[in-house]
Image 1 (cartoon, rainbow, N blue to C red):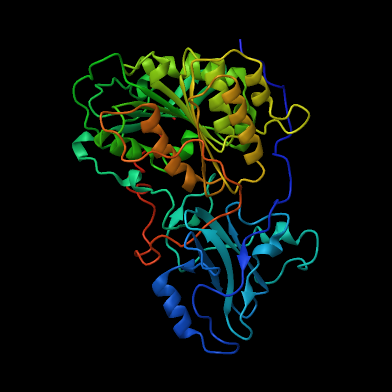
Image 2 (image 1 turned 45 degrees about the vertical axis):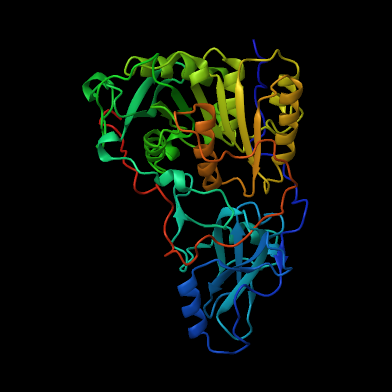
Length: 489
């Protein structure tokens, strides 16, 4: 048996200030108008180039760029803050407040970022009517004043709904290409929504089931408590072998119908990077339920291993081999994925975790999982872990977990740090890179993410990838968002 988790904990990570300054620099990545000057030509150039605007590194280093965030203010604009994921410090909002070119509508701030940075960001605009800028409640109030960036159409859906996030990616950032790999219509899988019974969770749990083309699945209809298969199936005869490899991807309500992970799986399978595989995407319901369940709870593990997977095995020819089963998650989901495999290695033999909350719990039992690994026998589990170098709160705990895994005999544990934050944009890239490493198909990837890469946080980077590339949206997100709740839900 693996160690039992603590019964409860504070519902937030440790609150510590950013250890190094936000990499702010003077000037801008394009010529600014002078004080009191007309600005129509300036904004026309901004519209042509897109935002954020990227220029050479102010210090002349080709591995960095100057990245300028902009806002066109109005008569009542008092302040504007750019908030790139984990680059802005909530404890010090002044660090990314924009400056105004005097007597113009131009507000700007430039950050010096490494050329491999990518991330989402918000723009917060104070147009009056709130507390004084120096008051204790000002920072919290300003966070409610989000505004869309009119010069950047590249967006990513926000967790739990709300206005989408804008994003930028610099030339050396991990590619998002895997999300737009081609897949002929007749070879696409299906994504269907179901209400899965679970006495352990006190009712049913909405779950999305990805069925690859050719699996010859038997999916129950609404009358049998099942769900509705959605268009795009290329289903043919049953696949040979010992059952379909399985991916269990936590926070399924976001990865499935919102981010369109079915399109990623279609493309990876069609390219031969992974074998035809099934995926289960359980719903996290809401923030309260997520905190209650994705904190190493035995009842949630029992739901996965004794309710959810057996339910799916009645509908698909699934593998029972843990070496061909992956559990994946991010943040609290990454913590739970790692714990689930260590607690149930007979079911999960591979962990794919991004930005796992290995600091948990916050309090006297901090980093419980790391300490438990050090005192437990080695399990037959493979790890592929990745973290953002800008995650200054979580990164020290992540590095200690990596050390604990190595000392406990997990010499093959993959560990990678990307230049970004606690961000679905980065996690998309990492998920696409990690699946072929853990469950490889007949075609080897051209390049794999480097393992055991460790560098200090907050040396971020760069030039917005293809700001001139028509401000295209994220590959794959809209094209493959082809799921809807089943009639049984």
